[in-house]
Length: 313
Ligand code: TXA
Ligand code: MG
View 1 (cartoon, helix red, strand yellow):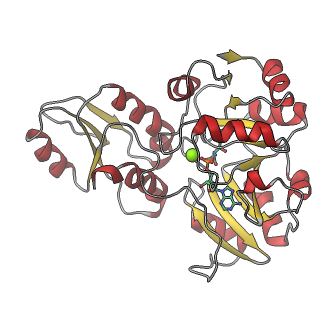
View 2: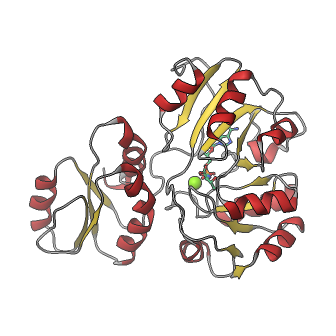
């Protein structure tokens, strides 16, 4: 059910959920200070209670409402990347509802770079908890139709067009002057390190993690098989009765439909989930996907595709 901005804000203030656009993927939003509203998110997504939510805020000036510490390092990252596809995991104020942070001592915060999302945040005055607007483990939505298809027509959706980043935000945990990368995204580790002035801490004992990143995530319904080379994919396709392919740049399979995406990580990311949604809708037996190259700018896309393909490994 499509709603306009005023309706979306009114519903959110009443403790209802509304799917809202962001630059990464659509989020299923609710008032982050309303426990009952947050329970609706978990129920609709069939999300395990152990998987915390990202709180979206209008500006970095609101970090102090949620975080117990906004260290100089966290401030530098917020200054450089917000509004934008970076989520900061910071020590939480004790009053942040336990359901938002799944009992963790931290809270995840992000200022999205989408005019409509920012308008909702500013005009409602709320902090909005918003996980991706899909059922747990399924593909994230990058259009209003994807949301309706995945969660049902009864979900109120604010249509803000297709998301331009296309995959979920980079998640960075900051503790004082140390940072760790919890989820890959289109803001790369090197970009964060440049702003931070120091490299990420790896494998620290008792490191916080971003739960809900278990394999078998971001998955279409149709099983996926990944290929490191175009020729292996094409050769394998010949042995299959009912398959669909996704290739980077040029190429096609002989006996099924081929989707081609540009050989550029940013444009490919923007169109990736929509293409996977389209491929899934063909109800083929198997999706054959060309894996991106092993270069840092492709890491986040590789991460999502390997999680999506886990079912068939
Ligand atoms: O781009 C995005 O981040 C999108 C849009 C809607 O903002 N949201 C999104 O939310 O991808 P979700 O719920 O699908 O993924 C959020 C991730 C989960 O892996 C969750 O475990 C992690 O963030 N997370 C949330 N709070 C955390 C915390 N306090 N500590 C560690 N990880 C946290
Ligand atoms: Mg998600």
